[in-house]
Image (cartoon, rainbow, N blue to C red; front, side):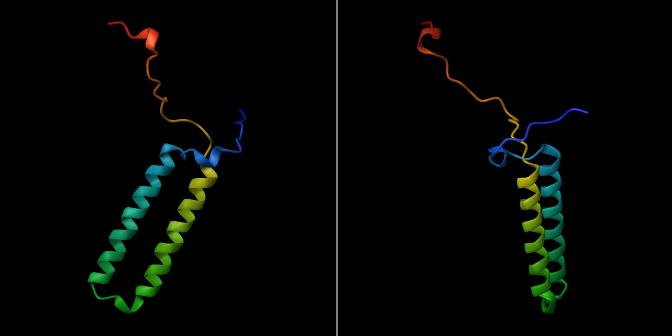
Length: 87
């Protein structure tokens, strides 16, 4: 079993792609459901719906930070040096 090195600065890097997609899908689905419920007249429960959305947002951001593994998912761009540019 391979071990991965956990970096102290890993939280500054993005979470894995599968989690970011899951987070986006869950958030969009929940927003749609809450909007539909409000349109259908469930305004008395709007405080509960707000707590559900805030809880989902908090948990997803918490897991996003925990799953950040310090990997770079794009290669950084480096500009060509002056001696590499030929006219």
